[in-house]
Length: 209
Image (cartoon, rainbow, N blue to C red; front, side):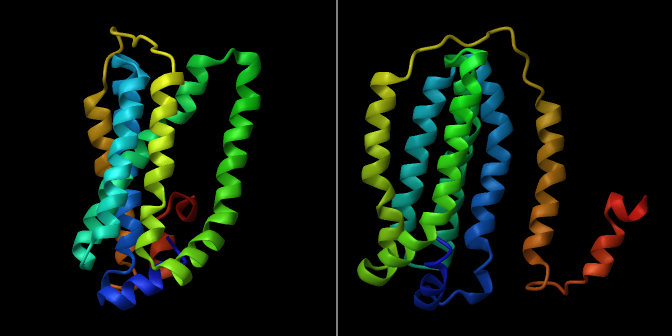
């Protein structure tokens, strides 16, 4: 996505909304992670894993079909909801399936995949953008996601949820209310509003200590 962003902005004429291509995904996923994590404790991981993957694929398809920056930002937010669900459930599912002795190995494997993706992803994204167009940066998720959906449907165990788990809705609401303004403020800083690192530093707990 990062390597395709300049091409996208040039074609859709949305330089002023450039940052929201990334922030919309980040905001949506940040809100989704705690909510899906708790709901999956109640009702099991599998349905939310499948739903999260379907939402991610729908958002990817919408991103590729977008005709303006508004549509693309909305599709990116939808993708973030699905991505946030997958992020939350990937770690917790390992804890459900594997014994404590095996969890470290599988967690290390997942983290290494994330690390490899952060290195290879921009290279592949640039190649796809140059040879097939930026829309295929999103379309490429569809066949891979469908394969993952089939594998999850057949291989992921049906683990029962813990019905007595209580959802801390107030805590989730406070978390969202606290995180969203910070993320939105950092997104607007230097673009919509003037940015002052000194002023921002004075508001952090470290600078006050």
